[in-house]
Amino acid sequence: MSVEAPVVVIGSGFGGLGAAVRLRAMGHRVVVLEARDQPGGRAGVWKRDGYTFDAGPTVMTAPYLIDELYAALGRDRRDYVELLPVDPFYRIDFHDGSSFDYVGDEERLMAQIASFNKNDVDNYRRLVAHIKRIFDIGYLQLSDVPFDKFTDMLKVVPDLVKLESYRSVYSLISKYLEDERLRQVFTFQPLLVGGNPFKVTSIYTLIHWLERTWGVYFVKGGTTALVHSLVELLAEVDVEVRLNAPVAEIEVQDGQAKAVRLENGERIPCQFVVANADPSMVYQRMIDPAHRKKHTDKSVERKHQSMSLFVAYFGTKKTYPELAHHTIVLGPRYQGLLTDIFDRKVLAEDFSLYLHAPARTDPSMAPPGHESFYVLSPVPNDKSGINWEEEGPRYLERIMGELERRLLPGLSQEIVTQHFVTPDYFGKDLRSKNGAAFGLEPVLTQSAWFRYHNRSEDVDGLYFVGASTHPGAGVPGVLSTAKVMERMVPRPRNKEPVPHHPRIKVAV
Image (tube, rainbow, N blue to C red; front, side):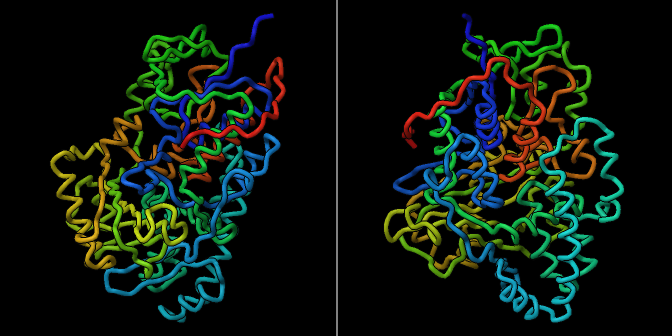
């Protein structure tokens, strides 16, 4: 009896790993193909001189989405990986020297709001009532629902209009809050998914209530520990995650995805394909133009990609215990800086930063008495034309100087190891269109039905998960894309039972 071809998952980011788990739980045979030498996609890892640096996402919210994956295969996430609560969620450090600890505890949060502006205590309560309504529809009802047809979008338009989704995040928050610093505290969150708070729809205010509802967590051992535990979980149920296996082409016959061909020439027949790769790159590089009536090269080029990132990773020979785990370091400008990044696509003289200090929560991320950090600066994507080989070292020096001045005294004398990545890394290593760090920019005209569809309109048997599909970027977003995919793909013809092998340790 012939063995049925597997489902091929391209890419092992959280979207691809989540898809592989859900497909295997359905009874499909699955193989995951990863182009790089480590799993995780953007959620990779750097290990240098005894320090562990998460390469990508470090903020974990909506932990139930992670728990669901282990439960789908009859496991308990707590047996594999530990999630550690983070408090405060974020510390926002303002250019004027003031700071705000964004926390989940209602009493502490209100006390801080009152210290900035007493009127905004009641204003915030009214704002939260509005955000809860957005959350109930935009997240609870729509985050894992396919937007396959335009009529799917039309059904929810009346509710979205009532919730003022035509406003930007900043516009809606400003309708309620008076203090400009508080407006920044409660509007920076879209930047975590690649969106400009002055442009993205106010639906993205739901991120605030998602954090308030389930909290903010850090994975013990770093985000990489979660990636490797999912690879371990897949190995236990006979799913191979093949590294160094870049896909060159998706073969299409009679409009149907039939096989994938690797760059080394190997051909892998498949039942269907689930791509966790950037859809822009999949359409332009992996599918012959003859099979693309909708997503032509011109159509793809018209889409607006998100901003990119400059990220520096460094380890110190001392600790800075006064720091929070997550610090948002705001510069002197807010809207003007974001206009430079998103619209003008120029590298400004000023910047705002995100500083990650994981040893606050998990000292194992650095040698004893030492500390590991990464600092992230939003920058324009590759449409800017910036020569990062020349500009990168200068930009690093400016950022490290600002950190030393504001948060890390004596930093230049304490550094043991450091390196950085630029938009070139996102474009070349992670194969992201225009070096974008978050896929498509989440503006209204590129959200829900207007985003890349989870089911390809050009090729039958091709599905997409990941940041550029509905519902979007961020760990909860990409894990939810796998839930959308699960609702759309065909059931297996010959269901393969899920084995219960003993734990299989995978080297990190």
